[in-house]
Image (cartoon, rainbow, N blue to C red):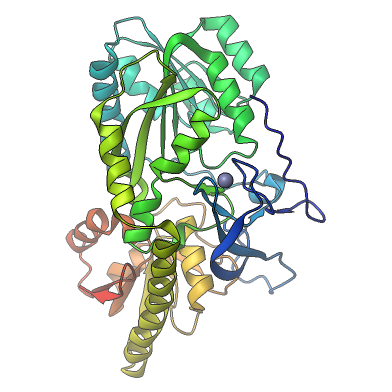
Length: 421
Ligand SMILES: [Zn+2]
């Protein structure tokens, strides 16, 4: 179906969301407001004087009709993704393992055979498709950024384009219908979602399957991941809300699974209604979601825990600074900008943020602050007493590595509740 919904209600290039991004209902309520935020990927060069910078309200809305949790302002993509957008593949060990597991699981559940075609939307540098290609499948990617060039160089056929009716038709004409279309960590980011689903359907064989992986709302609530709220993320799916979106487009959810990527995600298989058996996993996860109680109550609790985590973290920092100790930040993912902006941590509290050598963020300030991003080596050379884990969602992978490289100080884990390890 074609979406009747236009999101261009605001002034200028950004649009205030006054009806649900998926179902169009105007019955929206505010669930969380984190204040005004600079675009997370606009970083000024260290030494530059502060100058004018946009800031956007970071608000979460809840749709009383379809239960979708969504951002309250859609920012012009030209602002969020400038030409010098700092591309990082972000291919952590968890991500690699996840894609290998996705390949194995889907091949078994769907009975895929050698030579079947897999098309990946937002295929980035081809990491996901490389797992299928190694398994003997035909693969094709669609990716708008320069990461497409890396994929092609690595032998993964990729069309450098946004996903839409035109790019879908071009790929289908070239390689035929797909047994499986995948979309990992991009299905919640694209505006005009119904047009995207329509393009995906046009890529799929009659008995084809669409597999999406998205940040999972329930995990986000349980671990107080307010720091994943920024304007690149338009929607936060539960199985209830993503199922509603898919059903609006004639798709039926046939399998779902919680996976560990990006601090907790959900993998959802969908097929044209009635073409495939629905596995018990779907009912099980829906029942788990229902058993948690009404979503508005859960969001109120999330709101309370978010505010408490901020106060707790500031109290902890106040104590450390009173003792005359240094604090640095570990890693500058996009979510670090949300955490620092919301809590108000500045250069008096945190000297610098460390990134591994070669990061394009080194030599820049964290957005909206005068906190510089510097080389990770500072951690081992200067041994600051405390290191605030801004990439806390992969803290279990990071902390032992930093210890092994010689860091002897303490780690502050900011969420779900601030603690020192
Ligand atoms: Zn809705």
